[in-house]
Image (tube, rainbow, N blue to C red; front, side, top):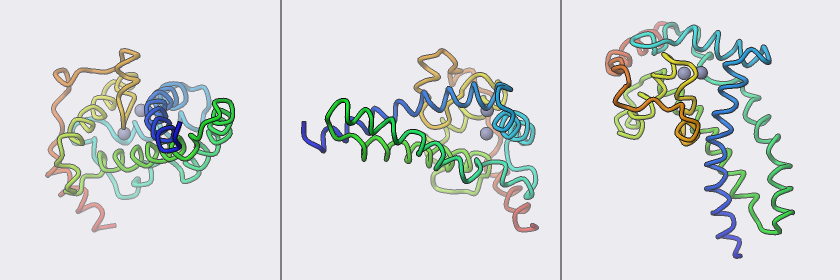
Length: 190
Ligand SMILES: [Zn+2]
Ligand SMILES: [Zn+2]
C-alpha cells in the first residue's frame, strides 16, 4: 500500500477513534469521581462556572483559564498514544504514524479551540457557521445534562453509545451577540 493511502486511512481512523477517546475520558475521568484532579477541574469547576442560558458564557474575566485544559494535558495525551501508534505500525507493517498522530493533534486542537469559542463569544466568523452553531447547541445541552452529548468535536461516539440528544430536543441557545458584548466588557475591564 502506498504511504499516502495508508497515512490517509490512518488519519481518518484516528479521527474516529478520537471521538471514542474523548467520550470515554469525558464520561469516566471528567464526570466520575474516580480520579480527583480531572473530576474537580471539569465536573465541579468548569460545570460549576459555566451553566446554561446566559450563564453558558464567561461569567468573570478571572475564570477565563477554567475553559481550557491545563497546558500539559496535550503533550501527556499525545505522548501516551505515541507507542501505541508505533506498535500498530510495526504490527501491520504499513506507514500510519504521521497520519495517525496528526489526527490526534488536530482533534485535540479542535476540542480546545471550539470549546473556548463556545464559552467565550467574540463575533468570530466561525461562530456564524452552521457547523459551529450545531456543535455549540450540542455542547450547550451537555451543560444541562452532564451524561449526554459528551463529544465536543465529533459526536460519533454519542451516536454509537446512544447519548446524543437530538437537535429537536435542544434548549434554545443564549444570544451570542449579547454574550459577545458582555464578554467584551468583562475582558476590557480586566
Ligand atoms: Zn463546556
Ligand atoms: Zn462535561
